[in-house]
Length: 274
Image 1 (cartoon, rainbow, N blue to C red):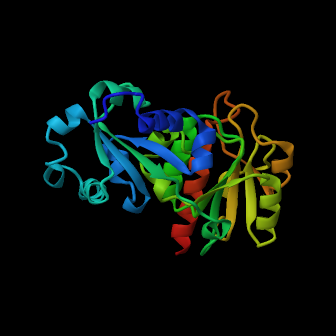
Image 2 (cartoon, rainbow, N blue to C red; image 1 turned 30 degrees about the vertical axis):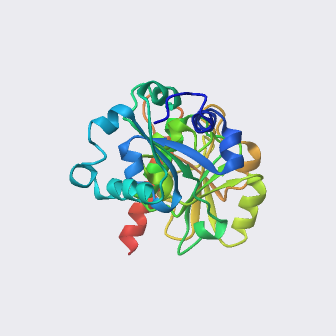
Image 3 (cartoon, rainbow, N blue to C red; image 1 turned 90 degrees about the vertical axis):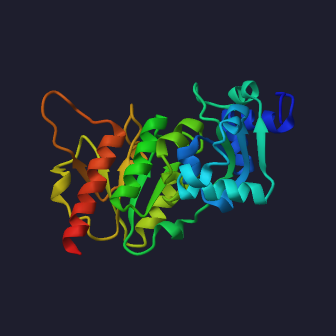
């Protein structure tokens, strides 16, 4: 049993939780809780830890009977590879990002995709410029999966996808929604446009409502920063500017809400045409 924060692995986990640069350099991240671990592909699992209380509660031994089959497979794989370790409750609390840990935590390899992975079939993309709120990013990933989006493109200035709060907010979609992080978003979008993909920007200067366009072909939506919207350079990448109708005195919606409305309008049109 690990009983001290002086343990190198415990220090490493805390560093992964706190440092985006470390996560990026090592290609690893930390996930907490049974829900997210049940969604984790076993081939991405690198280390698995349980608290002393979790072990004494017989949760591990009862995994096959009481937990989802996927979670049981994660524990089974960890045992076979001898990467499952028990941690004292006090130390476990120190390495967790949540206030009320569930007693299970893993170090996981980050999924990696190429742009071609996002452009298969009839692409439907969501492009995010400098989204800052972890909850927004996680919600966009979950909604994108539900709406049939083929991939998410993020600027380097977007909040780290593998930060603990974003990982929890995705509720497993982080493993299933292909994504790329663009070092130069304008250049990447210009290259994508040359492949016949049309971009639409949610913008206050839009002349038509969002349901007045045809999204059945290869296309993508440009979503800007919560406070500043899209930059002029990324706005210029749009083939059309659109508006979402709003009553009252509102000028804009939450970034995740706006993205969801657009994604599901595209989903509606594509289902109608299929």
